[in-house]
Length: 159
Image: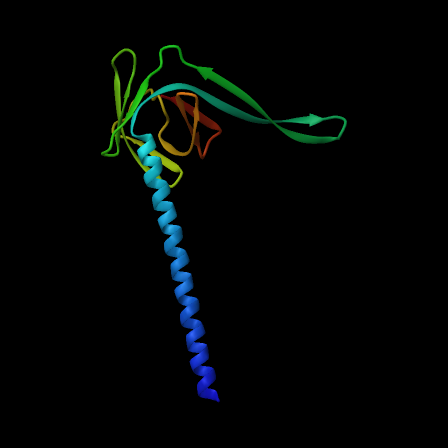
């Protein structure tokens, strides 16, 4: 009787451990597929069309007698837009209308991208850091929003 329970317990544990391994491999595959899909969509030339910043402040609501969080949205669009070209070797070049260039490298992990500059410059078209990517398509225009994770800022890229 004890031997039957031991064998049954061993079979259950084996099946349970196989099931856990399968799930983690599926999740890893989904994340890899998502990363590859985002990489393919990113490669090529984009126009840095504008930025949006959110200034979080607080104001006192007299009627409620308490402080409330408010967010002011500041949007700017450029009229002489720089371009960014994402290359397949995980580098990118930002080209300004005055022919100035900035070189950087990038890494995608699932729906995030990390941008890192090769050299120190006084002005950058896009801040160095990690961004969440949100892509949409409207008619024939692809739109990519790079949402800065540690600040309230996003860049709008179009092609």
